[in-house]
Amino acid sequence: MLSQLKSIQNNGGYTLCAGKDGFLYVSHERGIAPIMKQLEKDSRYFSDCIIVDRVIGKAAAMLYHRSRVAYIHARLMSEAAYNYLSAHHIPFSYEALCPYIINRTQTGMCPMEECVKDTEDNESAYIALKEKLSSLRSKALEKEGNTYE
Image 1 (cartoon, rainbow, N blue to C red):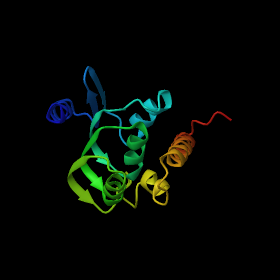
Image 2: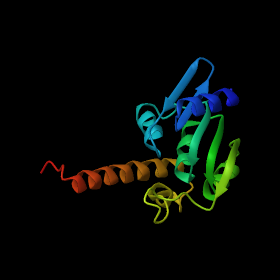
Image 3: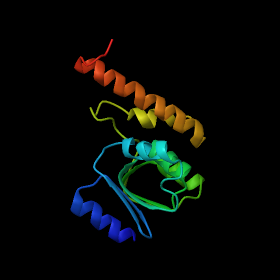
């Protein structure tokens, strides 16, 4: 299944592929957005899935752990994600390891990784990440001048 998911990801240009018997989820969305979108519907959406994701930071690792995935593979994984997954005995593999995930403007740490760097509890991480995503989306709308006030 892992090799099939890697192939699907490569051929489709997906950022995320998740699968298990009779189930396949794919997304082109970046960051933790596609994970959060599904976990908001069902906290165990990815339960028992094999995950193939382009980038796994600690935030994604914690969200996948919360959903009870079976296995995670990342093209790029942060050291914090590596340490978290190891500590929680979640099977994983990666192609490259980095000190931390860089934000999209390449000026520092990813805000999601920053948001969970000091917690080990995936429930409090989920709440903090949900708030952070909401805040970032609001700021993006304000920046574009699309406020509704």
